[in-house]
Length: 184
Image 1 (cartoon, helix red, strand yellow):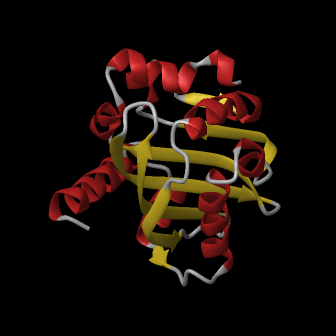
Image 2 (cartoon, rainbow, N blue to C red):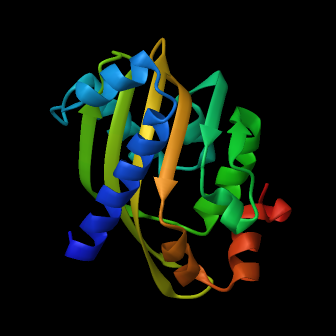
């Protein structure tokens, strides 16, 4: 991973931790102190691997991994003109537009971390794809927090660099990619 990209991942992770730490919950403080990298072949690693594979198989495959009551959050999504918090149904509509514009996204540099809470996973990974409508290379580094309930994702919070999204096209094009109702 390039130095600038790694710095971005660290910056996002520190921002997440500092934002969450301001809430000063004992559970979060314990989680932050006890987060440890896990074996990619662990149950937590399998959850992340299954999710990343599902992104290339379609919205239905992704949604199978989520609990019916799941909440999906993209804290920086407002910059695309899309909601920052979605329920499972809304997420399905969002995925249909997003995944159609990011076919065969390749993920690499996957790291998974177990939190103090057994049902919480942190992951970081890199994604790259050529956007069909613009023929531009899209590169993104992600940091996600996943909470599981009975083996399904009940809460998914994904942090990414809004500046990288600008390589997908101008503001109107990008907004249409993620909000195009004709793909839903």
